[in-house]
Length: 415
Image (cartoon, rainbow, N blue to C red; front, side):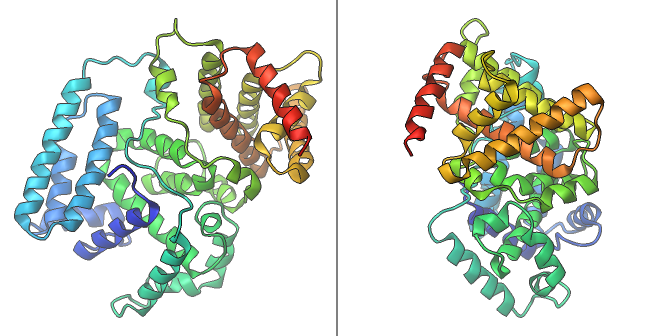
């Protein structure tokens, strides 16, 4: 299975709900207690084995554990007898152990590899694909008509106007489905539950690296899932619940989102693992930008988050001494990220506002930074990273990049 589409990932949750009561009040304790007492629950038994017996020796093997675990669960869903499940598990153990041994001699080439692993293997959300809207609406109808859904369960979410209002403001699933309807609310709830299942499989020390990979692979259009994952895993990127709520309630510019499909190019792995002596100047700038993007995520103070994300913009947009930095950064960010000419000026103004805040922070000690401003600066930084990686095969130096921007400006100036 090369791609796990969102609808398939959601079906995993439904399977898990059939074999055990996954989603009680005290989720982790409830799950663990259920598995300990249910010797005949094959899925529970397998997950316990996964948690207790699989050796983990490197970042790469941890990534492979996630891949293989998901493959295993999907295979179990299709199995129709205990012997098939047992054989699937043995094959899984063999794959994970062999993979761990194969890569155990690898030493990460930089701190970025250790702290910010990018590879996520087979997990690839496909945010928009043919038939998805219809699928979710039909799925919602089936759930509503199911006789075994309790009155206190997900149906309340479908009819709760307050829930609709709060979810309707959010990025992620609502935007992917395209409108605020019962299907979108159901999807958001199921994704939350799916992440509860998946994160429970992963030992605590690798949950945060997994969330980083999930964030990078899904893109800003799916950032809500990242924030849900943070809440589910009870691990912190120094974002409290208020900040998370603010993040979820802010809606990015949809036109900007659609410029990128939300998947970081696979070429990032080549850049990270390459010898420092063979990296081009442009590739090095991408790694520097990734470092500061990572620092932005981990910064304690909102003002520092914004500062670090603006550093990413400066690194990637190659400041020219001929222009004021705020003008140069804002105009080029808009040129690259906003494909609709009618929206380009307003986008540039938003970026310039971020730079005005940056100056106030640096020179005046300004502290009153809003979550909306942090989220927008993170969005711009993230998408510029995407863009830079996507052109890194052809662009090798600052000079080439400036020529590229000039050419792009001439092309889009005629739009």
